[in-house]
Length: 313
Image 1 (tube, rainbow, N blue to C red):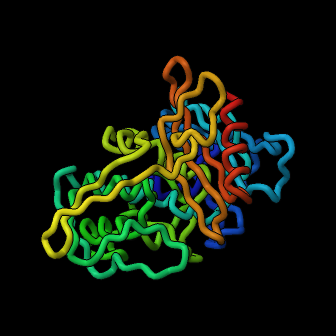
Image 2 (image 1 turned 180 degrees about the horizontal axis):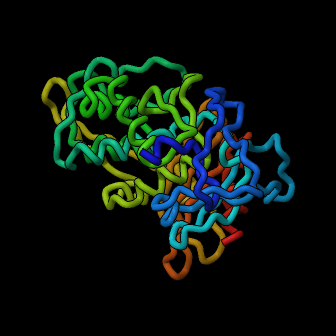
């Protein structure tokens, strides 16, 4: 299939790309001269392609402040800005965009998910809702914990319910990534906790977000500021937890440019990945945009850079 032949799409032409694939997250899969454009006919007609790379969109922030940034006009299939968009980096919890896509392909909101023992994650700093083995909830409740609160235990529960195991679900994630053309991506888990073989690119995050927002279910969750999540504990008792979004734009702690409405997005933070955000916004006319900032040095820098990107709309 054509999608499996092209590791990256950078413009319009007819020659398939053949370039070395490096699994190193610090490396770059972008090795094409922009003077020789390429095209995947029938595929790039309705997605944004990158025809040039730029640098330094935000004054006061040097190359040590972030690793990649991009802005896409999803409504008109135009790339408005791209800087290191094909650089392979750790996505942290932005991974959960793909987790949600695969889950929505196989689950209904009312399906019941029961947690197994693997929801007990002991890694330091892991974001956890606190689910325990034997707890059960609907898929919709688990998805709220996954996308709003970025709960890693919810990610494991969803993965095992859909894929039978974390490994089986990761295989499903990778197949879906390949189908979307995200050839600079490889997943080993559904939550994004650090693994050297778990990486993506800013461009691939655009492709994944562009697919995810086709689901009303996804948009409903990422736009919510808070949610009360009921669930059933292993002993049969009714429990509930209050969840709040991790998105500072929705919390009111960060502000987009005038005329831009933040619909929602997905954050991602680990020591190795830095601070990351893929964001879905609309302008005054309702036209949609997807922005991505990866490996920002600090959370404040992440939101300042995202705002600077949105000012280009």
